[in-house]
Image (cartoon, rainbow, N blue to C red; front, side, top):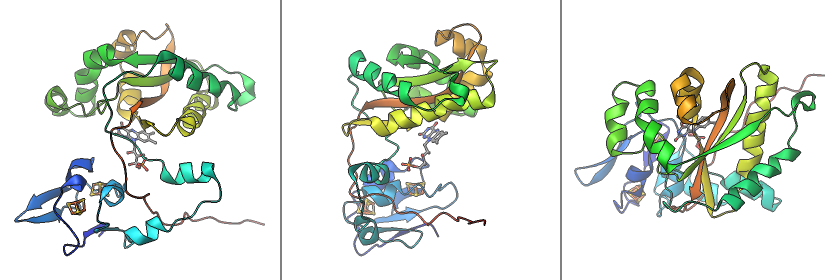
Length: 247
Ligand SMILES: Cc1cc2nc3c(=O)[nH]c(=O)nc-3n(C[C@H](O)[C@H](O)[C@H](O)COP(=O)(O)O)c2cc1C
Ligand code: SF4
Ligand code: SF4
């Protein structure tokens, strides 16, 4: 089982229940119950628990807290989390623009540099949220009306766009640029990859129109951003990745 609750250590604060993106945790008969069915093993419950009362794939909180890093950048990479709790205040355009302009230094297939950016704000997000949610699942539209499952309450989405005629490698430029931008975010700014928007915008020209995309452009990556309204107690710990060394 990916997640186990150490009931003796748990204080039933329910922070894990609120944090789980897949609604796997609940308070039942005075104890936290875990349902594995939709668990994606993201470790957010493990990372948030103030008591270290959750194990993830048998890893303990103490093991995660002991993870060491050899540089501030390595520490940033280890501690990065997809943030889904934001303060509602918008970020200054100057801050967002500075981050976007940093991506000028990202690699680019044949240096063609076809990536452009569109930053959408709350007005557009509110306008298209339900339409995007319905495209994930017809039942999601009703949920989006009461809870922002698409944009997670973020005040902005930074959207990397490329010409529809671009090659897959040229479209990859935008994904690399967003990944670099994410790592460059200052500590107080959180982010999550908004795959729901990317997928919906790629399929639906009406959504692209409402996002004011230039004619003939498509979305290649989307990153919800805003000031974090959450703090994790520890990083997530994950199994080593298999590597083959071929001579
Ligand atoms: C391409 C991509 C698309 C994603 N789309 C979404 C999304 O639409 N909504 C969301 O809340 N998280 C999204 N995520 C975040 C993943 O769920 C998250 O990275 C994963 O659960 C691991 O958690 P972590 O990022 O905190 O390590 C996406 C991540 C990637 C890389
Ligand atoms: S976050 Fe930890 S202490 Fe709080 S309810 Fe969940 S398992 Fe228990
Ligand atoms: S690992 Fe992620 S999906 Fe699974 S219970 Fe914890 S927070 Fe929920």
